[in-house]
Image (cartoon, rainbow, N blue to C red; front, side):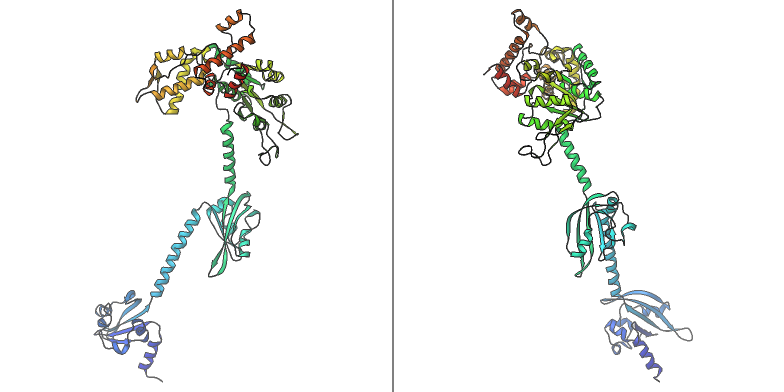
Amino acid sequence: MPPPEKEMNVILNSTHEGIMAVDGLGRITVFNRAAEELLGMKSENVLGCLVTQVIPNTRLHLVLRTGRAELNQRQQLGHITIITNRVPIKGLDGKIVGAVAVFRDITDVIQLAEEITSLKETQTMLQAIINSTQDAISVVDENGMGLLINPAYTRLTGFAEKDVIKQPATVDIAEGESVHLQVLKTGQQVKGVSMKVGPARKAVLVDAAPMVVDGMLKGSVAVIHDVSEIHRLSEELDSAHRLIRRLEAKYTFDDIVGMSEEIRYAVAHAKKAAEIPATVLLRGESGTGKELFAHAIHHTSQRRRSRFVRVSCAAIPESLLESELFGYVEGAFTGAKPGGRRGYFEEANKGTLFLDEIGEINLAVQAKLLRVLQEKEIVRVGDSKPVSVDVRIIAATNANLEERVKKGQFREDLYYRLNVVPIYIPPLRHRKTDIPHLVSYLLRKLNQEYGRSVADISPAALNRLLDYSWPGNVRELENLLGRAIINLGYGQTAIESEHLPPLVKYLDYRFSGRPDKRAEHFHRSGETLEELRSKWEKELVTDALAQVGGNRAKAAALLGISIRSLYQKLSRYRIS
């Protein structure tokens, strides 16, 4: 049996914790093998030495002096960190005869704790990123079982974590094949896979990629894009593009300004027309407000909740007008869109179609338009199958349709179909008492558009407006007031006469559907009404060309007609 001292050394050297003891004078009496390894010192070199000389930052000498134990104390020893318990050793009489320190290296533990803390922080940050993204994310393990989803996934599919986590990868699919399973099977990423997910069968595009850790496939992560929103936005954009040219009705009869007998008669007639579904023909010069009346009639009619489609017949090339109005089928002509296209009549189904400048359409289109009015059906270009339509027609023209019928340029049967409810809109020169009201209304409108605060117009400036013949009607008045506002100086709030641009005196006897003084002279000469009208129109065109130096575009603008209409008049009257 070994002696007690040797047995004690065996015990001390078997433990993995360092043990160091000192006597009452602070000299080292015990220094086991673990202490040697931790501190890098040999026991024979330290035994009998003062502990303060061996370990400068020791506190064993303080324990000797105070007699108080120090437990679980952290201490730095060179390049290592230890956790130590220091306790005093008391004799049989209770006096302190030494102290002992038991310690172990916690450097690896601290490093591991720091790594765990860093890992937790990284995990928290990644979780925050995943949760904040607007794209839905789904993660499965190597067995295809749900591992992680984010809030965007729940919003998109309607599935919560309890529905997906630890469930098969196919649990959320309403239509299509699981991209997760494809990735796990092939180990390759997949992109742009279309499918439908969740109870609502949302249309989505999915990108998925494998998760590889240390060369081992550990799962699959998928990013799910909601394309239903893209489809909705695309449809809204298409609708917006259509509405650029075919606006919903936005004007009412309250937007028609004037107190004259002429305009009140036109408004009263239009209100009666709005109550019935009959075809309306708006007649009047360019700029009198025919489109405004068309909007107001639709807005007051029983079709006001349906679409209001506006078509300027003169603005569409003759070669395209038929396909634009009635649509076409696939392959109808070179450049036709796949699947064909609906025309304006089908766009306006259940609503109102406003055909502006109806007098400009050719005879072939007139024949198809007559069929619509008679049979309530259209035939697309390139097709033979009729399509039923329920459309209320409002047509408008500044042309002399009666003369065109006489010359064979406009179908007589179509004329009578269109002229069911004719409404004449008087030119501005025939209702000059409305000019002050119009000026007030237009100034408010232009102030909003230009960001100005013009409040009034001087009597002198107003008199100039009243003396003018207004060949461009209300549209010309609005343009003139706009230029006057631009001419105002800083801080000026009233339009004076000098702010108005030059007003070119123009013939007041241009054809408007009503007789004037000039007509009396021609009538006394024995000429017919049609001959009088032709002379008036020829003289007006000639004078307009003379005023603008032969510039045909300017002459058309001055006359308030399209350039195509002007060329037709030049040809008709043989004006070079």
